[in-house]
Length: 283
Picture 1 (cartoon, helix red, strand yellow):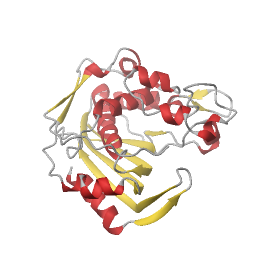
Picture 2 (cartoon, rainbow, N blue to C red):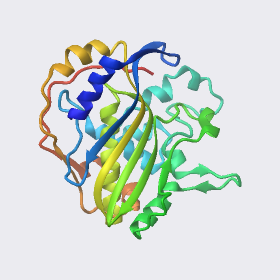
Picture 3 (spheres, rainbow, N blue to C red):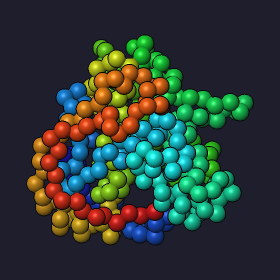
């Protein structure tokens, strides 16, 4: 919790204003932020200085792991974060690759599960990683990437948290996640939850011990219409202790994640929080 608040304060103290062409708004911006999450000791990095909706964050990552490409599928598992980008993004609405309502195109999980090879076949990055980790293999290339510049025009949004590298050391699984751009007040806690969850669930299905998750952000920013709420409300609140995340121990494989798992298989214990803050969302 403290590292999150320190980053917010750093952006306010050191950030520079940048015009964002996509949203038409200014962002107070810093370059490079490094966060760490103690998955081994189950210190779940859920924001306590405002209410945070962790279930939607886990549902979104679950959708990525399943390779979803439609906002309706995300809604069905408890996540509405793709509604706007799939249906309200003017550039995407006019894109000839868009298939219709709720279509997201070839973004995130599509790339992770069905990366298009030159011969027209699909490469399942995640299955290869899951198989390797299950055997305790780390070839120093256990990399899941959603970043495919050749298909940016075929999706509604470039990936923000784009690459996840898994590492095995002494029977312990580590994760390093890379994010090119981060809306800190609104989006970062989603991303923190997802990095933590991804390491914890992959360790469970591979039979490895979870270690630390490392989260690198390149461009961390606060939009101009979020600044007052962050500075005058959230940063003035005292944080509570970190809660813990519990995962159904019956989840034992990638196939389980693809088929029967729901949000009922995850539980957060000891979550104390201040009241919600309604930060503006920029499409």
